[in-house]
Length: 339
Image (cartoon, rainbow, N blue to C red; front, side):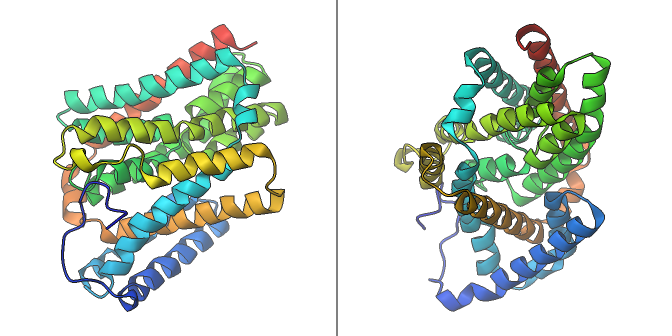
């Protein structure tokens, strides 16, 4: 129960280690299948993982798979969040300069707030707005999974999370194609375009792909800006946890920072010192990707399909609004502050 931040896991019979392998094996095999499809057809890996998981949703009715799938969607996710810190160094962030760094913080904050406000106007809860807005503002599917963990299943159910993951993957893929063309149309140079593509595109892979498609310099700048947004995941998780804890009955026993947020900071600090060999750092990044993909796949399998279908397309409008806000703010900052 140490990983159950808000008491979401129902009390029940004590699980044994042998209860986990069946569900874990299903999640791993499904993740490998999604990786194969992504590699051979060029589709986003996160989207493939979610779609394969949803295709196997009928397995959610088998109680033998429950413990392993829950472990994959919760514990493996938390470990993956810790390892995401291996992508970030403080030197990369400082190298942006104070003006660009402040602009990124403002863009992330306002984008996340726009998701919360849009959700309230459209009749959804603030928690769903924080989930959708935070996913757009920070790092797409990875942020969505992390924020859902902090918010807890009492506020964000599996159907809502699956819907956000689908929307984020679709919007991120579209942004990778459209945003470089917008930068060309606005006459942005390499540094300006790199800032926009790093500050406005949702997922890391699509952000870097768009940057390097524009130019080598734009790709390098987009990578630094995007990783700075990834670094903001930890404070975003901490702040979200504190704000929403006030609404929950478990607020009094909530830790100041969840262990996986502390781990994220720790890995980023170690990576910043420069003592970690490049091969080890790349291995940690690859392992983080694998764990997050496995968590996404398990989330798809565990999603209640009836609730997902009943929600309709309206929640996707929140992602669209937050995406437009992020793009407009990024373009404005690039035009006024980046030269």
